[in-house]
Structure formats: C-alpha cells, structure tokens
Image 1 (cartoon, rainbow, N blue to C red):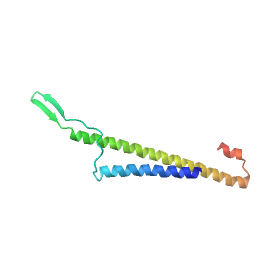
Image 2 (image 1 turned 180 degrees about the horizontal axis):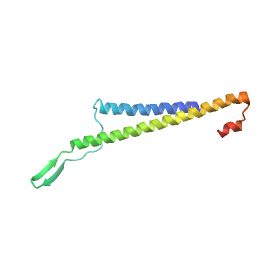
Image 3 (image 1 turned 135 degrees about the vertical axis):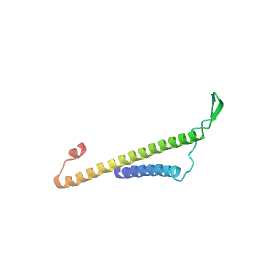
Length: 116
C-alpha cells in the first residue's frame, strides 16, 4: 500500500514541477501574456515646470511577471517536496522489504523491524 501511495506522490510532484516549468517557459520564452494581477494607474506629479504624467504600463508588466515567477517557483518547490516525500516512503518500504528477506535467512524478530 505504501508503494502505491509513494509512486502516486512522486507522480503528483513531477506533474506539479512540469506544470510550473511549462508555465514559465510559455511566459518567458514564447511571450504569452500573464494574467494581470497588479493594475496601477498613471501617476501625475506637479513639478516646477508644470504637471507631468508618468506612464505605469511598464511597471505593471514587470510587477505581474514578478508575481507570476514567485507563484511558479512556489509550485515548483511544493512539487519537489511532494516527490521527496514519495521517495522517502519508497525508500522506507524497500528497507522494510530487505529486512524481511533477512528475517527469513537470519530470523530477525518483528520487534526489531518495528523499531526501524
């Protein structure tokens, strides 16, 4: 049972990592647009030479790309952690199976196996 769940966790973690890498590739290499999260209006400041308007279109794009990159890195790290948990479950199961085969040869007690 732990083997199936371990492999399932590894697959889920790999899918999350693949999703984040593909999303970042589509945005940064293929130049697909990012969902606009931040919308700043143009700034208007008064100077000694008169009112001046500063466009915020570039700042909006950089802020949205930064937020997207942070989200994708978070999903990537969560997928890596999930796959690591699955890997740990499989490792523990393999050690348990190896000790059970030793039990047949050297008659190791069940209490010794439970302590591991």
